Length: 285
Image (cartoon, rainbow, N blue to C red; front, side, top):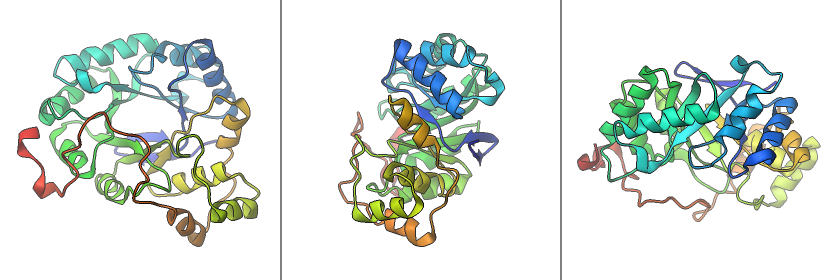
C-alpha cells in the first residue's frame, strides 16, 4: 500500500496515477486497473475531458470512496472570483463524487490578480466543493505569495519534476510552508531519461529505470509523484516502488542528471514570478 505525504492537514498518497489525456472507456478501464493494483491517488483536470470517466471508475470499484484521493484542476482562464467556484462545481458534478479531495489552480494567469484567485479558491473550499486546495505550476515566489494570500491552507504545488529539471527553489518554498510537492512527468516525456548511472542503479536493485526514477521522487521529503501510462503492465510496474530504497549516494547520482535545458513542458504563459519574494511584481497581487 502506498504511503502518504502529510501536508497542512491533507494526507496525500505519495504515488498517484495521472489520467490525462486518456478518455472514455480506456480511461475507465485503466483507472479501474490502477485501483486494483493499489493506487489510491488519481489526478485529472477540467481540461482533460475525462472527469466523468475517472469518477465512474472510482464509484464502480470495490475500493471505498473514503480511501481514494482525487485531484482536479481549474483552468487558468477561469480564475476570477465566481468563475473559479463555478468551474469547481462543474468538475464535481462531472466526477459524480461527494467532494473533490484536492482542487488546484492549473496554471497561474498574470492577467488576473493573485489575491482574487486565492480568495475564490478559499471560497470554493468553504462552500464544501473541495476538502483541500492548492496550486500547480507556480514558481517559488508566486507560491509563497499565494500561500500568504489564501485564507485556506495551500497544501500542494504540482509541477513538472524529474532528474533533468532543477526544482530546488520551488521545493524549498513548498517545504517551508509544510505543503507537498506533486511531480508530474516524473519519468520525463516519453521515458527519455537515460544514463549509465541510472541503468547501473536499476540493475543493482533488480528494478527498471522507471522504478528508480519514481523511487527517487517519492524518497524526497514532501514529494509525491503522479506517473501516467496506458500500458496495464507498466501501470503495475510503476506502483512497485515501495519494496526498496535508494542510498544517499544513489540519490545523488540520479540528481546529478539535471541539465540547464531540462524542462520539457512549456508553460502557456510568460512567468513573471521567477524571482526572490522581495522582487515580486506588486501589480500581480
